[in-house]
Structures are given as structure tokens and as C-alpha cells.
Length: 207
Image 1 (cartoon, rainbow, N blue to C red):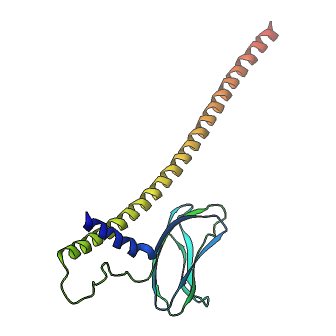
Image 2 (image 1 turned 60 degrees about the vertical axis):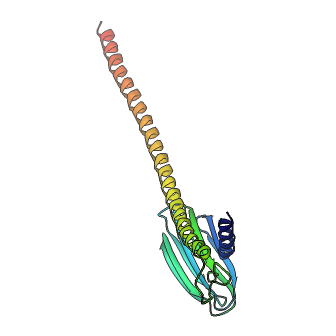
């Protein structure tokens, strides 16, 4: 129990520098995120469009002097890594300005800084104890599990939104077919009635 508590505590310390969020990006709109970073800090960005239109978005990253570090157009997903060469505010922007009617849902994972050692004296020259080795193994396994869970959540959200959109389109199509069917049926009845009415009128006129 003490081993599990120690590993959970160390994992909590490690994951402080990571930010994950999902946000709505309306049509003809742009949204930016800002992060204050020191010199020599490595940061990683992963993003994916999980709903809306053709599942694409424009993305660009700039440094404190507004120099473009990364720029891509109409990407569904991508990753970017960079090590800062100056201290200041770095900007990550997502743009949906090319879309006139469809809004997007975007997932963003921002990680800054090198991963801290799991144990305070992990860089020593002596061999790790059995408990320390177990903590490292659990830590690596939990990182893989966390990444897998994130990927499966994104896939589930993406597939669920597509299924709901398909269900909505099929429902509208079914309603339209039903309306057309009733309209054609009523039209056929009226045409047949007009035939019999014309015959009755012609018979009455002849007598």
C-alpha cells in the first residue's frame, strides 16, 4: 500500500506541466492560448479535430517576438515540439476562419518542461532498489495506459459525433420521404376522383 501511495504521489508531481482541454471553435472565428515559458524549455503540442465540417482546422504557434514557429492549414491532427530560445509568452492559435457555417470541436494537449525524475535520487550511480524499480515500472505502464485512454476517448467522441450526425441526416431524409409519399398518395386520390367526376358530369349531360 505504501509503494502504491509513493508512486501516485510521484506521478502527481510529474503531470503538473501538462494541460489537456477540449474546446468549441465557432465558424469564422479564431482562438488562442498563451503560456509563459523560460529559456531552454521544451514544449510539445498535440491536437485533433474531433467534430465539425471536414474535421480540419488551421493552427500556428508563435514566440514572444511573433515569429512563426509552426503553421499548418486544414489539418485534422498533428504534433509539434520545440525548445524555447527566449523567455516570454508563447502563443498557440487555432483558426476556423475559412469555414462559413460549421463550427469545430478541438482537442489540445500541451506539455511543457522535461519530465522530472520519478525519485529524488534517481540519477545516482548506485543501483535502484527493488521498490524503486517497481515504481519505475508502474510509472511507465501508467503512462502507456493514460495515452491509450486518451486515444480511445478521442476515437469514441469522434465516432459518436459522426454516428449522431448520420442519424440526424437519416431522420431528416426519412421525414422527407414520408412527406413526399403522402403528397403523391393524396395527389393520386385527387386525380382518380377527378376522372370519376368528369364521367358523372358527361353522363348527366347526355341524358
